[in-house]
Length: 161
Ligand code: CU
Image 1 (spheres, rainbow, N blue to C red):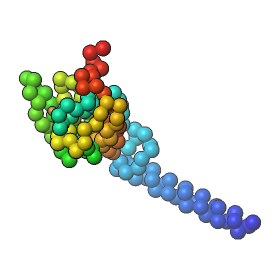
Image 2 (image 1 turned 180 degrees about the vertical axis):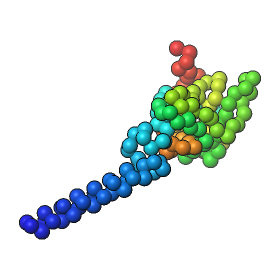
Image 3 (image 1 turned 30 degrees about the vertical axis):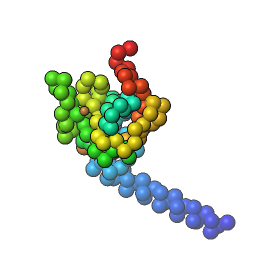
Image 4 (image 1 turned 120 degrees about the vertical axis):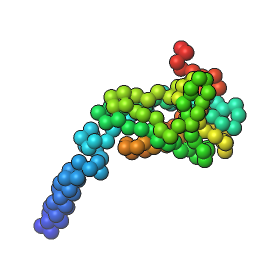
């Protein structure tokens, strides 16, 4: 009995030391969990979808909300269905590849039909309406975020409702 108590308190002491070490280095952004205090932007993804592709490429749309005082950038997107996922902006009804999209502090990045979007080139599989496509968003500062894009009808556009 006595021995067990000793082991337990040793574990508790270890846990306490670890917690102290973690909070000690939170200023360099390596500690997770201390929401908003480590300088990493807090990003939330909503409204994600992919219109059912009609050719061997597809578009992806979503909104990334930044609820922090730190601006970030969407730098790349990866997905198992394409080895070449690009990010495009639309200018004068023509789309062109960009290196990154700004996600302003306390603002949002809107990827929507007719505007900026994710573009999946050379699809390995053609997802159908009702299926889901997993992607991973990569940022300049924030940790990567995994998102499942529901596949909607080819003409789906939530902004037109
Ligand atoms: Cu495009």
